[in-house]
Image (cartoon, rainbow, N blue to C red):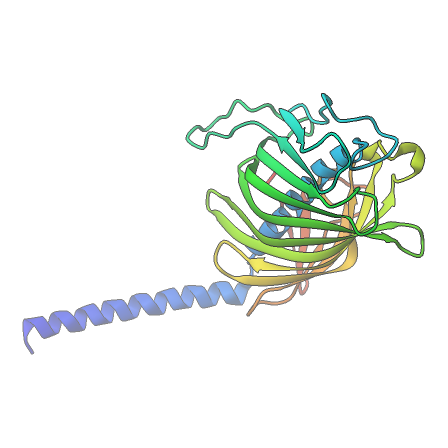
Length: 296
């Protein structure tokens, strides 16, 4: 056999051995089924997109043009110390109306940024833009959020988040259809997509006497979402016990859902006991439990 042929055979054997080892490692990881990336990124998406709605909701409920009729105008009034400016497209209730919330500028070439820390301990950058087809509390009104160079802490956000007022349910609670389209969240070693359709039910803090006081507002969330994590794996998630969105806490305080990831065991997600405010999601696979930290 010629030297060239011997060399080719040796190269083939090396490549074959490397492939077998790599395949064995992948099989081992798959057999152990220890993947938690999907839970972390999906929970992060819920947190960031829900947070953007909270920012818009708080301002809308304090403005007479688009929110509560008993509220004062937002002109010159900022709910968050990191907000640099709030602009409305008009001073009269002629719809559609457009609102823009401006935060500081994020210089990605610097490790540290001079933007103020918000009152809730986070940093926000860029703009949240919202369009209103009618008053926020009127049935049929649609509020659509888009993002302009927006980031929360180190996570850049793209996509559309839309809330449609469905009116009151049989118990007198206001309901909203929440749709997220083409959401993409990026950061260092992070690049994933997410979208979903949910129903928000406003179950506390909506009494006429205190509509402008938004920090006691509580919503219950049901629905379905899906996406692709930073490793390219797809997933889908369905809420089975309502997520509790209490504005006194930055994270969901309770609720359960079912997470499906192709070729892996089904996961059950649990936000814990109502009343406990933390950034931990409990992931259950069969009888194995993982405490997964939302990266904040």
